[in-house]
Length: 232
View 1 (tube, rainbow, N blue to C red):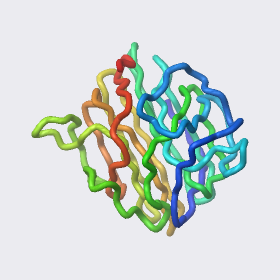
View 2: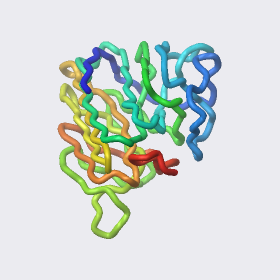
View 3: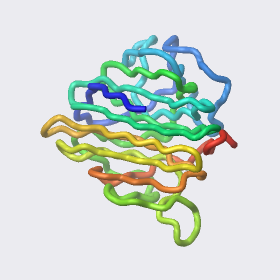
View 4: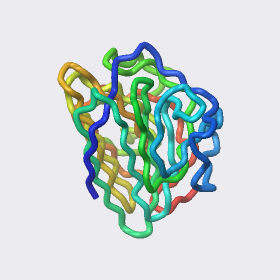
């Protein structure tokens, strides 16, 4: 499946995750994310303004556990993102989680066919065009390469939630391969600007591939592994 979207990101001095989202949505799905802190929730189907108002989506990093045999998609609307392209393929039965970063200067967040999005804490430092200062001295992943996922001595990527500040004027592409699914996404920045990204790498994933991105910095551990069948 493929879709394109024009979206925006701007340079910012800080990102803060808030602890409430009043009225923006009710949870679409009863599947929660044990370990998520603060309670901020975005329903998995809808279009939401981004901001600090009571009916707006708060900036931050969010995680959706996914729905069985459903490809979760999203769009971030903002003038600094030139284009967004996503491809997904699943072999039944499948289920995988998704992560997204929403920055304060974005206008709208749209999400169809997803489970409820839950906030991830702790939040990252500023991304935008000023780059990332790194997080919690945890593992980082180079912006270019194909990496095996696991927790063994010879594995090159540890499961977790990561964020990427992007590279100026470049397209960052990420690809996850799991037991029954492949999901790939590219975010292209307009000239002289950057696009931040977030990704969850689950314990069930086989490989993670990154092309044209800055270094991926650790944000938080995986709170709830879904893998191809939604196992906890």
